[in-house]
Image 1 (cartoon, one colour):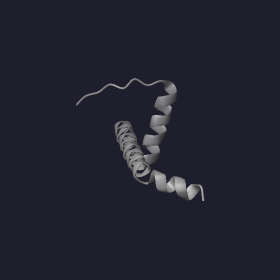
Image 2 (spheres, rainbow, N blue to C red; image 1 turned 135 degrees about the horizontal axis):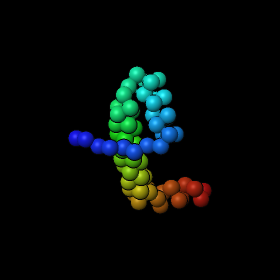
Image 3 (cartoon, rainbow, N blue to C red; image 1 turned 45 degrees about the vertical axis):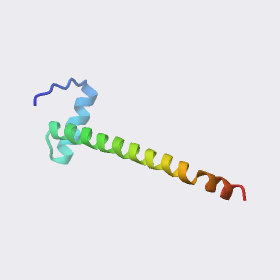
Image 4 (cartoon, rainbow, N blue to C red; image 1 turned 60 degrees about the horizontal axis):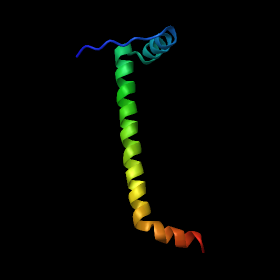
Length: 68
């Protein structure tokens, strides 16, 4: 699937430097960055949901332990 990405001089220089240092194409650097950001976002969402669930289940116990 084709996609056009418009960059400015700063972004293009950073992208070129990353691609060179990693031995990758600019396209691959962008692809990996997007996939990594997506994975991190998904992880944060799962952690937040697990934390909320734990607070709902154990909140009263944690409150009592904190007030001892």
